[in-house]
Length: 400
Image 1 (cartoon, rainbow, N blue to C red):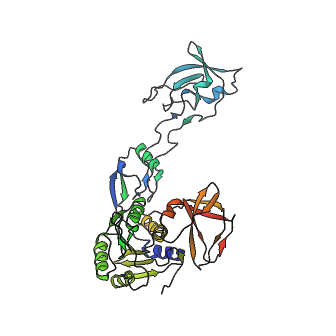
Image 2: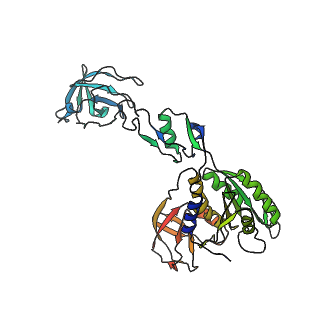
Image 3: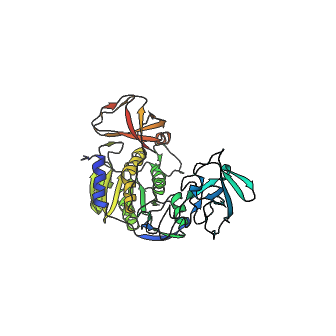
């Protein structure tokens, strides 16, 4: 018999038991750092940009020279030179002068604004007419405006994206220290399972959870250590668990988590370690197990692929981020239900939806049909004390 706790209680328990676990760091080249988690704070040791830089093609000016200028009363300035790309101008711009600078080029000393070439007319003999005033700092980036020495560029635990890679490259960094990727063992168990490429015979089903969990682990920045399917035999499952836990940081076992005659996982976790939770008040996912073996986190995920999918997202993925001193920021959006939803299970319920604009249409779902998740692009939770929601009710959608 289950002694269930709520999903939020399960998440808090995982944090209290395993929240201090951390992976060690390793150095990788920047080309291989995408999606990895920083193991150190990145602090700037230089100015970015290293010089006052133009964002337009035009003329550098002293902004006060253009006060009150217009089409009818232009400001006339004398061209003092040009800024070669990749080089620093050597002269200082004086009042009454302008200086041609291409996009990305360096402004001369004394200049405090750029004027786009469209607002400048060549009068000949080195004189140019300016017809639009410019505020100081217009169309330029000042030295150090992006970063200064001592500024934090990126924090410890940040998962690196493409913009972060560009930022690190702008600092001249070619190697970076990141957390090692967690190794997560995946075992599917059940006499009814055959591999995805296997031939189906009456009474058999394909193993969905091993490839699905491996893909979810890859998305989460982890390394999946997949195991061949284990039949419902206690000695074989014990052997598989003991072998997997030797090299894995986290163990996922799907199937055999309930309290039936052939559900061996709860017994084995208690024999080899300790069960912390057996049963979560959520649909789908009630028979989920949280335990530990040798101090390592162990999750017994339901054989139901939809339940395994959501329990991974709700419990396993946050832990994987925590191992790298990071956390997940859920992508939430408000939407209105297009039709009513009933729920009277006495536990939270996951409702899949198809989100279009600010409208959320529930996706019909039956237990275990993973294809229904593919048809959805978000989901929300109905609280355990609600008997349903009406059409038009506002819900907070978590994007998939």
